[in-house]
Amino acid sequence: MSPLSRRRFLGATLAAAGAAAVTSVAGCATGAPPPRTLPARRPLAIPPLAPSTRDAAGRRVVELVAAPGTSAFLPGLATTTWGYGGLPFGGPTLRARRGEDVVLRVTNRLPETTTTHWHGATLPARADGGPHQPIAPGATWEASWRVDQPAATLWYHPHPHGATERHVHRGLAGLFLIDDDVPAGLPDRYGVDDVPLVLTDRAFAPDGAFDERHRNAVGLLGDTVLVNGTVAPYLDITTSRVRLRVLNASPARSYRVALDDEAPLTLVGTDSGLLPAPRTVDGVVLTPGERAEILVDLRPGARRVLRSVSHDLGTVNGISQAAGANDSFGLLELRPADRLEPSPAVPARLSRETPLEATAAARTRRFVLSNNRINGRDMDTARVDEVVPVAATEIWEFTNRHTQPHNIHVHDARMQVLEPGVPAAERPWKDTVAVPPMTTVRALVRVGPHADPEVPYMLHCHLLRHEDDGMMLQFLVVAPGQRPATSIAAAPDHDHG
Ligand code: C2O
Ligand code: CU
Ligand code: CU
Image (cartoon, rainbow, N blue to C red; front, side, top):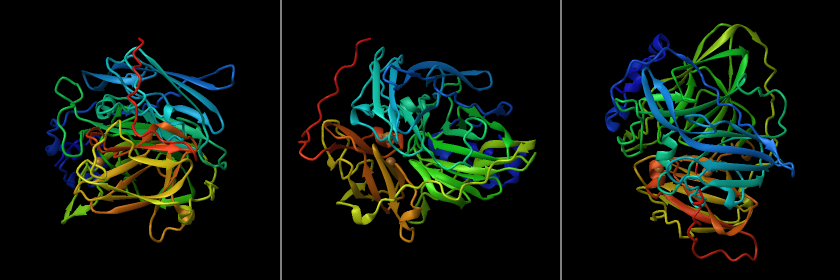
């Protein structure tokens, strides 16, 4: 049995839900340390909203510093961590409205070069913050663009070539909320009834340091879950409904987010936008990088537990593949007050966006995932793998020929997965999709309106170890008549600290 399932940090509730019977490979496969006695439950930390200013041109300016800090996750032990915006771990929540110009300035006070990628954003390649926009220690990098995409829960994290897992694992990750005109009725008071949940997992060395050494085939799996950096959290609730914006920021672990009694949840949003209409589900699977917005209804004084329950990421020869998917454990205790402010009715229609149509797809591209390669290739920062016309709609087909689960994230793109039987009008908007072993996922992919014949975007597995191992390709987005570079120039040296 895994440390996670033995670790009864939600005490009686967890045991009553039968979690103790769950078996797992995570603990043994990672060599994670034995379970510890956890501190008393703590109130869930809510990442602060990042302060911003307006410049003379009316642009929203945010300054972020990435720096080392010290966190206290376990009783009596200090953990060296990395964070943004003065937080020792994680980062403040960025927020911008559709139509706004944003200027994001990142200063690197870490001992090594990093980058800051705006995951899910539609933006110029130079602002993307991928491996081609390094920020040397002491340097400041500036990204700016006009936000023009529907309301969504995006996030930001480092993306340095070959070192993304380590930088994210040390704590660098924050949310980036895009606001748009959406129908009234969705809870939207940040930290009150609109609550971010950044899920990560860590293993600890005996001295309290994050264990960065013991990994299995999927990467680093931890035996301790952190929600917004809080171990064993609870959330006091004052309204009859809450909106939870859940991000899987784990390097490798997947989650199936559900209520303790498998009571229905209302799914209202996925990675890159709201659903056309609310959908009742009994759980949501999130592989690394994926997000979901869910609504939970509460009764006065009746505590609930949000959990992750075991799920199937795909089966090969009768063996279901793990990535922590066999584990069940508590995430967050929801503690409604004895009197709750009534929440407005859930709107029947959410997004009014026109769905992508397969008939509009100009062509099909195929990507075969094998042992940490895509189309048989390892990531090469100089190579141009694909050239895509600006604002194109295409079908991209991802085939996993490997016995391990992978997922695929495409920068600058919004996708809708083509699933038999799902009408176009009901397809969720995605930027990261799970590709189970020995399956093919076909998605309509819409790339953004920004062309650059020299600076590429990335397409990669979001299991961070796989990404670092080279499971990543690069594509250029070009306007008609633009001649794409045949190779990508090395990034300029940003060392002016
Ligand atoms: Cu969230 Cu290319 O990354
Ligand atoms: Cu991304
Ligand atoms: Cu992978």
